Image (cartoon, rainbow, N blue to C red; front, side, top):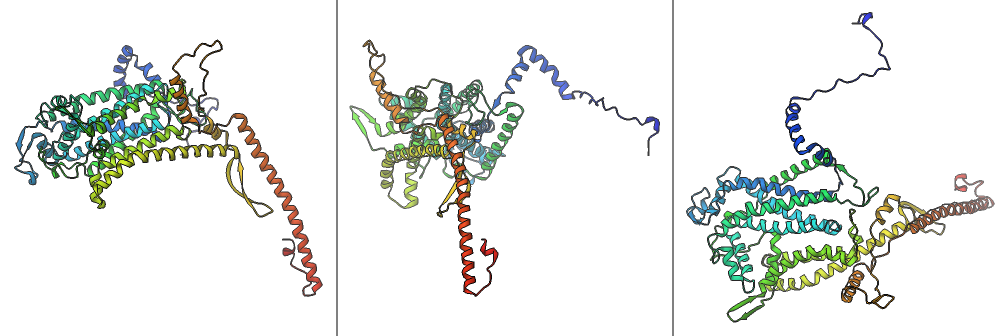
Length: 604
C-alpha cells in the first residue's frame, strides 16, 4: 500500500544518517566500576594500552616455545587432579584394589595409590597419561625451541641472559620429569632411582655421604618418595614458573626476534599486535595442544605401571628404559669402559662418574657459555634482532648437528640390549660400535653439514649474480638449449644479503709505533685468530651493492642480446630455409613430375 503523499519526503543528500550510540551492556556496566577502581590505583589502562598493542612477528617456528609453555600449564592442571589422590608414602600395605593380578601383594602406599588412580578413580588413568605425555612434550618442545634459537643465532646480544634462563629451564625440567617419573614406586621407576643412586655414589670422596643425604640412609630408604613428591609438586614447579616469567618478561622487554625479509630491520618488528590477533591465535593454539594431548592420553598407552609390579630392591625389570631425555645419560654409562681406581679403602668409579656426572655437567656448561664464546671469537658487540639463516653461519650449524648426532647415538646406546635382542646381534658388538660411533660420526656430521651450508651460500650467490630461472627454454641456431634468467627481486636480494658478514681476524701488531707492547695476552689473541679463521675462513664473501647492481645490469644486457640475436638468427635461418624450399620446388618442376609444390611446405 502506498503511503499518503503528505508523509513521503525525499531524503536530503547533504545529511548523513548517524547511527545511534551503542549503550554498554549489563556485563560492561558491571565491570566498569571495578575496572575504574583498579585503574585509578594501578594505572592498568595506560599499561594495557601500551602492551596489548605490542607487535609480535609471525612464524611457525615460534610456536615451539608456545608448545613448551602450554604443555607445562597442562601438566599443572592435570597434576592438581593427581595430587588429590596420590599418597607419597613408602609405607607397606596389602593391595586390595580392583586389579586382580596384584591383589593381596605387599607394596608401598605410593604404588597402591597409583593403581587406584589408574583403575578406581573416574578419569584417573586418562589424567595420568595426559600428565605423562605433557611432561614428555614439555621437555621435547624446550629442546626443539632451544635448537631453533641456537641455529638462528637468537641468543646473541642482548639475549644472552635469556639463553641462560633457557638452559636453566631445560636442566630443571629434566630433573622435574625424572622426579615425577619416580613417584609411582613401580619396578621400572625404582630401577631408575637405583641408577641415580649409583651416580650419586660415584662422586669421588663424598659419594656415600651424598647418598645418605639424598635417600635418608642407605638405598632405597623410606623417605625418597616423599622428598621427591615435595620437590615435584612444590619446589621445582615454583622455580620453573619463576624462570618462565623472567624468560617471557625479557622477550617483551627486548622485543621478539624476526626472520629477515622485506621491510624488516634491526630497528622494527613486522607482525601482528598482541591484542586481539596474537591473543586469539595463541588461545586457539593452546586448545589445539590440549586436544592433542587428550587424544594421546586416551589412545596411546604410556607407563602401564601395573605390568611390572611394585619396586623390589632385589629385582630389576628386564629391558628397562628411562624416558628419552634421560636415556642419553644411561647410554653413556653403558658404553663407557670399566675404569676404576682403588686407593686405600676408597673406590673411584670413573666408569660412572665421567659419562654421567661430568658429561651432564659439561653439556649444560658448554650450552651456557656458547653465546659468550662466539661473541669473543667474532668480536661482535652490536645488538641483533634479525635472525640468521643457519647456512650463513656454517660452523655454528655444524656444531649443532654434531651435538645432536652425539646425543642420538648416546640415546641409542641406552637401548643396546634392546637393539641386540631385536636384531639378533651380539650385545658386545653393539657396545663396541657405539663407542666408536659417538666419536667418529659427530665429526663426519660436522664436516658434511659445514660443506652443505657453504654450498648453499654459494648457490645464493649464484642466484644473485646469474638471476632466477624463468622456465623459458631457448633453442640456439646450433641446436643448443638454454634457460632464460631474470634478476631477482629487490626484496629477495635484501633477504639474501642482509646478514652480517664475519671475516677472519687478521694478526694485529705486537707493539705500536713507539715500540710499546700491545695490551692483552698474545696467546689469547692467537687463539682468537685461529678460532675466527676456523669459523669464517671458508665462507664465500657477500656481494656488495655495487656488485649486485652490476650483476643485474649484466643479466638484463645478456637477455637483450639473446633476444635480438635469436631474432636475427631466426630471420637468417628463415631466409635460407625459404631459398631451399624454392630450390626444391624448381627441382620438382624440372623433373616434370609435379607442376607446383604446396605453398605451406614451401614457406615453412
